[in-house]
Length: 264
Image (tube, rainbow, N blue to C red; front, top):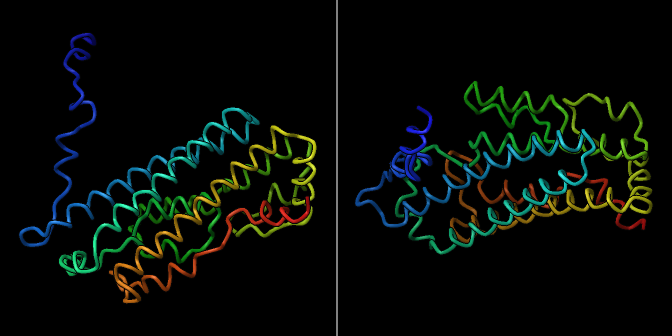
């Protein structure tokens, strides 16, 4: 029975290609040529966000189990996916302001701020802001809130550092995970010690810096893309557009790893 089922499986049926290609449904009349590109890019982002959540959660388990090599592999994959997310902005920027405005009014109240999966990623990376999920549907809101009350990727990294013999205070390892992590001098001293004495462990830290830098790069490119497309007009859904996005720049997610740079 299973052999017959396997024989019937095709590229298209396995990947649900027909269903996938039915999901791009422009709303503009004509429709406007560039609306399809806009939809494809943002649907692709959501697929990558799904994969990033999958990889981040696996990275946390791997770090907490002390598996250096698998952790390096997953963290490297995450950074590569983030590079792809940045590269997609190059494609969006082939669309001029006039081309975007030809269908922008059809977007109504929809906005990238409503991406529940991106809010989940932010929560995994340590964001602790109840307002970030307030506008989401109940099921999505609960997913974000659950992640905001769970250990972040940085908390998992600190367990890894501690397991390598570079002790992290118990009150930090067992802190209240509903609160945002604050930089700790004692943690920075442990990280410096790890870098000097544990080359393998230091590679994990550098991969985390890669991810931090990658997110900051994505945010910067996103701001500039919005500025060149709509200037400083309000975003769809009533958001402040580029003004809000600019406020998220240069906020590292792993501040301890940046603060030790001047201490080597």
